[in-house]
Length: 628
Image 1 (spheres, one colour):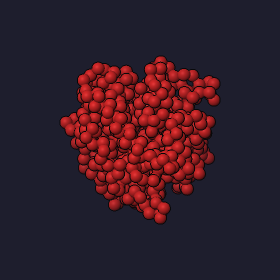
Image 2 (cartoon, helix red, strand yellow; image 1 turned 135 degrees about the vertical axis):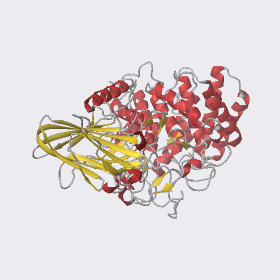
Image 3 (cartoon, one colour; image 1 turned 90 degrees about the vertical axis):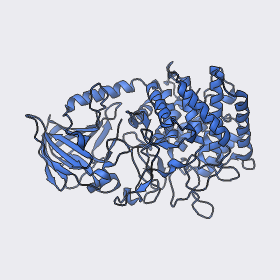
Image 4 (cartoon, rainbow, N blue to C red; image 1 turned 45 degrees about the horizontal axis):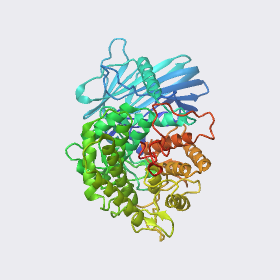
């Protein structure tokens, strides 16, 4: 919960930034070669091979990989200590424990730290170990220092540290890699076994807080744990993904840096955590939001650094060849300066949900919400770049207008519920005005579908959210027509959904970028939600099952699915994919009939999107977005 490491099937840590998610990478082989930084720990072989088995240990982020060799079987357990106890040294660590399960296995550790996104070879020193302590190596490059504690001697070849050893049945060997800023000196050593016990306990206790007990619990818990792992604990900020430049189009230019906090992604992540019983995370994110926008809430950015930084200048790293040759490799994100009016709706919705679900009241959050609506009142009619950050001309995107309506609607509910002062009648009139504007200008009566933007003919998968946020009821003929149009025009042969057409009828790109992109997993979950809402529950379940089958072997999802290559693409793992997985699981569980064993959620669980409450009329059913 400060950074993340990605571990390949052959036992290599080939991506890790430190000390934060958005810091320069120490290991960047994921976007280049082993010489750009990696740490292999596996049975010794001329050519590394995938583990025969791998899994997370229970409900945790503790990874176990096992290899069967001619001589025996070995397990490598990888984890990051959570460092949440009092007095813990809050530095990123990777602990790797080698355990020989049978026979004898020759193991090899090859550590190649390359700070600065693979650009720098560090200087390696061997500090004097404490009597009886582990062998210790320090690799230093400018502000960065990586400390390796192990029981084995490593040889140093031009900044690559290698050790081979034989593991016998019953042997347990621990490697501990610690990052610490070089000026702070050596970190204390830790006991790997104790850290493992603490980390197991942390994840078990955290997962036990989940209030969802339905038939999809395994997938829901794995997604929740992933979202927790994408949370930067010191500030409460939630990153969209821990990676940069994993391509949406293999070999193409659709490569972006997602190691920041998108207000939209973080807000919907917050909603899923709240609806499954996690209020502490909601409170931490709300405090992060108040700090990030403090002093200038009218100039709301779509994303910030994980501590609230505003400057996220985009640049390219020309020394990295990119994932499977996909260039450029970008850091920073130029979309931070875009105008995306839908973000106001997402933020207000998150504040509304926190306020109505037991999170301790915060008067500053209420005042922020009122100021955001005052801004929207003057600017909702402006064109913007839209939810998908299209690097083309600004347009009057229908989704942006719908979410402006959501922001006003939820604020009216706040005033009605609390009795606080505000221009209720004026804002009620504004809510009606926005609604009428969208229905008049964003709807194509000839095709019976809403469109991507005013006056356009193209579709957009974000239109699937219209019934989910309560803008129109699910049984409205315009909603049903839009769902069916998206199924016809934006679905792949697998039934998954594209965000929007990337090419016009002449084959020209319409979003300012070359190449194609895959089916967007979040949009595909939204379709399953909508199908359930309009009564096509079995079809929704079948689509949801196909989406679950796309997860990798340990239950993780990237941003997209390439229907041509039959593989996941985009940054990984992706919060914006795991959140709608949770939402759809909750909705289908609420449908319930096909699952006699499914029990209703406990008393602390919030209503399921689309499930009407006893106090709400049908037109304002509690749906994703309102979740009241």
